[in-house]
Image (tube, rainbow, N blue to C red; front, side, top):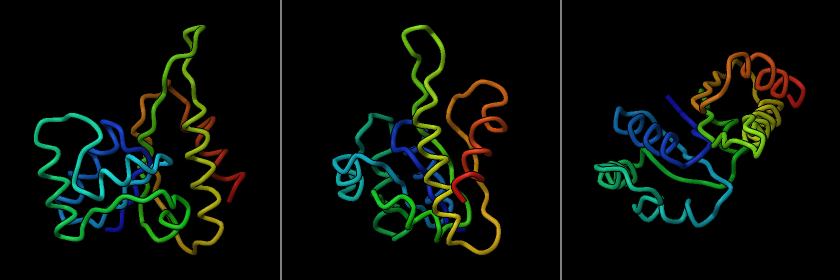
Length: 142
């Protein structure tokens, strides 16, 4: 299965490395070039025990790569995991700006894709975020 993972923090990088270790072809996507460079050099931008050897194995086996070319890689994949940050705002509400950006990118990518595409939200979100934010954003942009 060809997988894209948006976000290379704890959730995204561990998800991507694990899916690659299971034999999937995974592209981890991020807007931060320095994180992608570290990943492609076999270095983890986060600390998680056992993660770096898993990244190196995935890269060596050509099952894992990092990229900043988000839409170009989504269109070539079968499934996309949204694993972006959802920090709290000053008022305590959840900041969905990264979720909105990721879902907009997915929608734009799907304009050029025939067939189905599965989207999984792994980010921490409140109930109904997928139905009220992610899905409408994808549909509006596609």
